Image 1 (tube, rainbow, N blue to C red):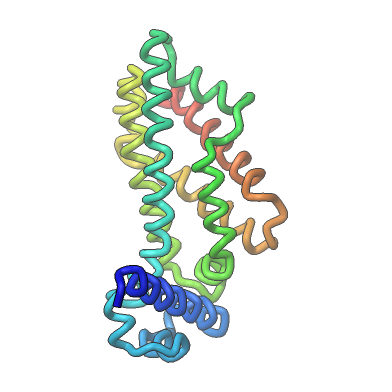
Image 2: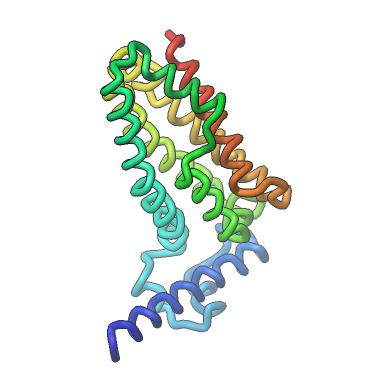
Length: 223
């Protein structure tokens, strides 16, 4: 079997397993679903399931982690460009200027829009997981994962912009600000999907991005 044929088979099996999980969550509570249920619905063997995933939790995490990895990979170069620009300008309060300007005029970075395009693409899955038949495990996991990613990058950004006071402030050190932003994002996604996506991915991305920037701008005056 050629490498391309093998890769195609892997992708097909993973797609079947994901679709089976989504269909099952729409029928019953996530906690009641077993690996056997998923494999049977996907019409693959349990061995095939365990070839790619450890359990149902790992299946869900892989979907979410793929999105986070892709977005982080695309956002990091943009973050480096911002750091280079503001450090080369020797701006006295680069943190406030950066997030103040974003809120007033700039659209969200394209990777930020892709976050919501991902949620739209997997709408059935996230609506099921975040809804009443979903799992508190996933909501906690999603918030924690986003908060961890935000915490590391925002503190690095604050240090790079010369805002040591902000980087070492209590609200950053104890994880409050990243946790707050992550919770806002998860709640926004949940509402957006439950309401049938009344805004486009670009619109909801803009609202959430500006809300995040408003929060980060205010952090500069928090004790």
